[in-house]
Image 1 (cartoon, rainbow, N blue to C red):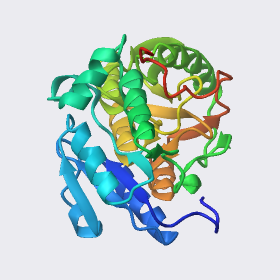
Image 2: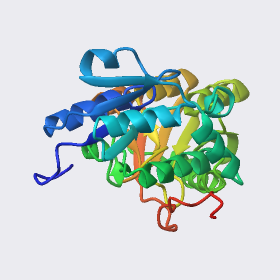
Image 3: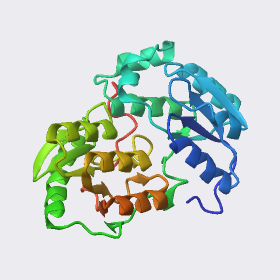
Image 4: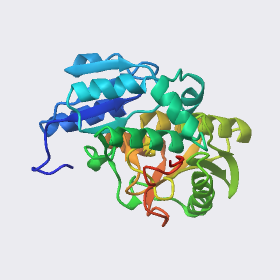
Length: 292
């Protein structure tokens, strides 16, 4: 968590969907920080208006409006929190001139390249994008078994295999989740997200016990696209007959952590956090951009 010397002024939040933005606002407020909120119209909850004192709605493509409003509000550091569905990033954006220029400069149009490039533009405007878990460190697990039940021998084998598979697809920026049954990969995540990947795996196996593995990317940039597990994922696992979940320690957010573990215990699901794979340092802001 930020220490007592943390500057309490000049903070902003770029809010996508889900619980993440609300948790960040709550964590920041506990530190005496009042955040100016940029709410993404295609994703963010209208409920944010009830708890944010300063809020501006923008569409996904309105980068200039976002920067202008944050500068108007004196934002110097900003947290990006909340999912933006990957398919919307590439299908719903109607870019303004600044974002259009940015998109044109990208040799690759994957999510990391796009958001990393936006981060660089913000930096150029004097707005620093910070670790999205900064105010939520208690929700980031340490290595070890988190539930009452530890993985059995078969689940442990599936976890080990699944970690290898998931880290391969994460390295290629395809997805972060692999679903395993009997040391066979049933499904991997792409743009549909973790919960839909679990549901697809259940349809394929017809009720066979599943192990879900969700990892970070090598050199995970903690400013965006941090792996998240929430109550809906545990509910989806229970419905799919999944019995075990493996995550990366230190790089995964467990929303509503106590309730999540209680729900997993009630469903007989074991959760274990593993040390993340060794990798390069988090991506440089300029990665994925053409330099002039």
